[in-house]
Image (cartoon, rainbow, N blue to C red; front, side, top):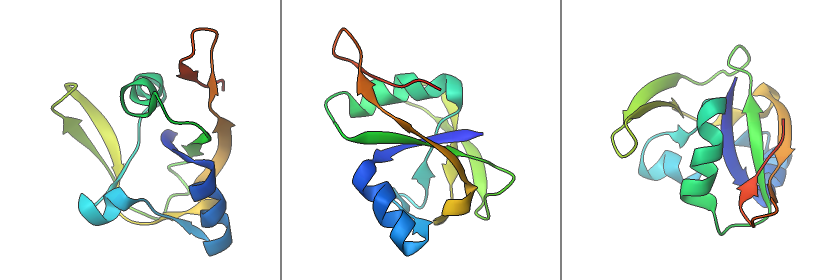
Amino acid sequence: MIYHITTLQAWQQALIIGTYTHDSLVYEGFIHASKLEQTQATLQRYYSTQTNLVILAINLAKCTTEIKYEMADSVGENFPHIYGKLNIDAVSAVYSVFKDDKGNNTFLI
């Protein structure tokens, strides 16, 4: 399982279209994702001020798009990258992001 942070609106649009995409697919050639243990830090690093976020849990066995684990030099870790549009049936769960008692974005699985 890998995880992708997005807006609720983008996920709702994907449900209508039948596939999920992200601007990073156009500009970088892939959609960013995280392993579970990386997701909270990713949420804080890049999405700390955003609201109306969800986290997509992506079942690798159902994903029809190539996934590559590649080094993110800025944090020194390998992250999963999705090299194409994501088929929505690969998303096994959608988790809401909410503010904790310190005002930080977080989620529960």
